[in-house]
Image (cartoon, rainbow, N blue to C red; front, side, top):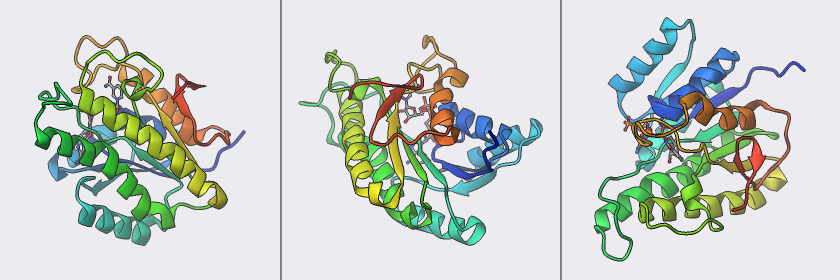
Length: 233
Ligand SMILES: NC(=O)c1ccc[n+]([C@@H]2O[C@H](COP(=O)([O-])OP(=O)(O)OC[C@H]3O[C@@H](n4cnc5c(N)ncnc54)[C@H](OP(=O)(O)O)[C@@H]3O)[C@@H](O)[C@H]2O)c1
């Protein structure tokens, strides 16, 4: 089946899984907007893709800065008029994240600002650009699961991803009337700056479900995926 080219925006795509998602989507000839909070890193990412013969657009956007998100939405509206698929990928996992009961308040704030408020504000400000049939994909983590046992690892990050999962379900409900599909996915444990070198998965494997959710002929909404399969929240 021929799928027409879509305009797809990926946050935090200058490296890691987001970069690979952008790469795979550009390879499939979609119109990719690669966003990042640092111009030099963004330009470098775009150049690396150019070297592979791929053409993507860079947009400077810090997901913790609402003015930056608003400005980004304005620029995308002017340049492309719409965003068929919004992929919320940017996130932080801070080294100091050791305890929810006693850790630093700043770590808690920064993690929630980036991993939860960021995606929700992205959706608020880009929503008017997402057409009927559009998709929103939130990059979550098994660490945010409410079904798996708690193991004590990076509790603030895990809580941020649980909150993102909860937001995904509510947004799916709210946006069903506009025929916009909202899902979350877990890329698995992936070898990136965040995942570390011992992670068993490659970025290609980590990006696969996001690319599939962005491009396949599916009409699921309000679900949590890993390896293209629905998993429990
Ligand atoms: N790697 C794993 O094992 C794993 C497992 C489960 C879920 N995930 C999720 O997968 C996604 C990608 O992770 P990754 O492993 O690729 O991480 P990564 O290599 O650390 O990349 C994170 C990206 O997010 C960007 N970012 C952070 N804060 C931002 C902000 N305020 N505004 C804009 N961009 C910002 C970073 O930009 P800078 O370069 O400027 O810092 C970077 O581009 C995240 O949502 C993560 O939680 C990863």
